[in-house]
Amino acid sequence: MRNEIRREGVVRIFDKGTALRAAGVGLLVALVSYASAAGAQSRFWLRDDSSNGIRFGTGRLHTSLEFETRYDSFAGWGQSESGGLEEVGDVVLHVKPRLELRVPSRTLALEGDAGLDYVAYTGAEQSWTSRQSKLNANLGFNGLWNPDGDFRIEIDERFVRSDRTTNYELGVLTISNRNQAELAFDVQPGGGALSLRPSFTNTVEFFEERFQESCPPGIDCQGQVEPVNVNRWNYMTNTIGLNVGYQLSDRSAIVVDGKLGIHNYLEEISQDFDTNNLRATLGFVGLVAPKLELRANVGYGAQLGVEEAHQDNAFSGVIGGAELGYRITDYTRVQVGYRRDFHSSPTQLHYTNDRIYLAGQWRFIRDFGARLTLAYNMLGFPDDRSDEIFSLAIGPEYMPSDRIAIGASYGYLDRVSSTKSPAYEYARSEFGAYVAVRY
Image (tube, rainbow, N blue to C red; front, side, top):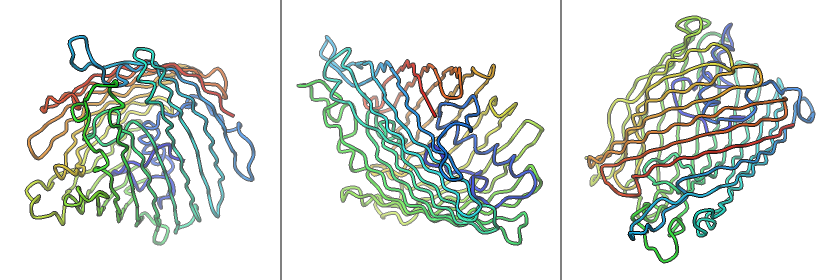
């Protein structure tokens, strides 16, 4: 089961359950699935643990438990000696139980996982931060009917509760509750190189207001350090999509991807900003050298059906990106890429995101490896506001056995904004260490 909600992109038709089964397709699947795997940053990636788990029919049930201690330099806003606002740190404990089920079958393949993350703020620097303790969750299910046939049906469901929202317009510390359900059909006419994947996706996301939990008692910083009334960002999107792929060789393919998302806000105050978001791209995915892979697409995006009062702020322009990856082994690879896209907003109708990134993972020996992600995001808004976000994540991991993973991590994020608002200008460092046991 994918460890995160699927990313949109040129390589979608090569995900699990799609229609390309000709020679060499397995290699392409492995190449493009790395994008999702890297984003998830799952533990136990260094060694093959397929023999672990409890037999469950033709499949296996895995259980795991992870303990992590992390120092977060930005657990909330406090009052400085001069009476202004300052970032307050804390020692944060994570307890993460998880279940994973995989049942392969030629008739109906099933995958499911359920993970919880209890986040306990200890109040190490200021006692009030302990009120921010919370429970996060990552729950998912995938069912694939007739996985080896020329016609397949796939159902995918994913719920994520997290305090690391992917909505860049919202400031730090916002909690997101996101559910995404997808129904897709994979068709390979005549069993040839052509594949079709029509799909329907429903996405609902709710954001929790924190009021002044991010400030010490008696300090009124609401609106200064985070957007007011974050529930106005609550939305539902129904997306109709069609992917068309044509395999050029056993190592490359052309992909046409089209999506129309009907984006509706759930709060009355935001409903004037409802839009229909169109994305259409043409792309290529494949090996351009024995160990060098290219994924690239370019196309057009637009916001349709916009209220007359907001038409001047509607997005219309080029979207797409390119990623070049050097793959030495399944465990050692490096990727560099650029992507441009737009996202809906209940305040300015949209914002754009130009993202440049570098990602890599290395297995130095069988039991020891490390991962690195470096990214730079440039956000643009219709009112000429601009934000810049630089982020870094790095961490080594050691697996003395197939059942135990021990590791450390360091993350850094620096954000600046032309608004000069504390809600969008902050720096954050996180140092962590963890141990996880899996069977």
